[in-house]
Length: 164
Image 1 (cartoon, one colour):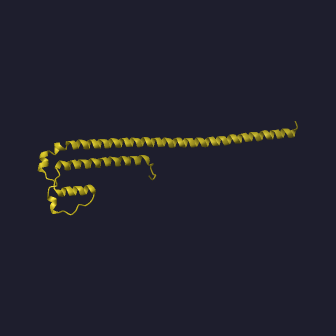
Image 2: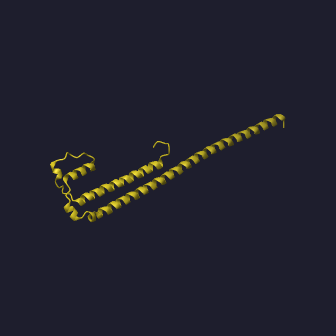
Image 3: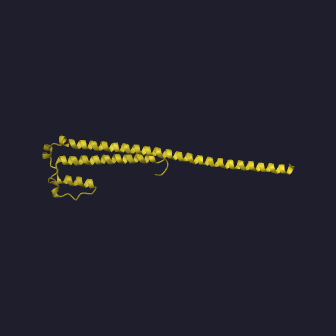
């Protein structure tokens, strides 16, 4: 073999080796990029799973709180006749003015100006007033538990320093 052929063969082998190394390098870079993407995907999935589990925990706690609030309210309602007896109902006259003020407070609307009829009996028994108050407070405590759960959920799903 002539020297020129040997040089050309050597150059071709070097070119083939260079091409192989370049191709292997590109495959390595692509594999690293895919690995980085997969790691980021895994981190995101793990964060989402943790957030979902925290959200489920918060919902469970909220449902339990509301259930307890409703059970306590129902128990108190059952006990009204023990604390507000029929004799107390007969002795206590709930004036119409009280009923108007209570209804105005429940609807967040100012009552009409007081009149001469406000002192008259409303026809409501004291035990009925007690039942209404228990229902109102039970609803209030249930709403409070719902708001607390919502605040907990927002805190759990908002990264520190980010805007919700």
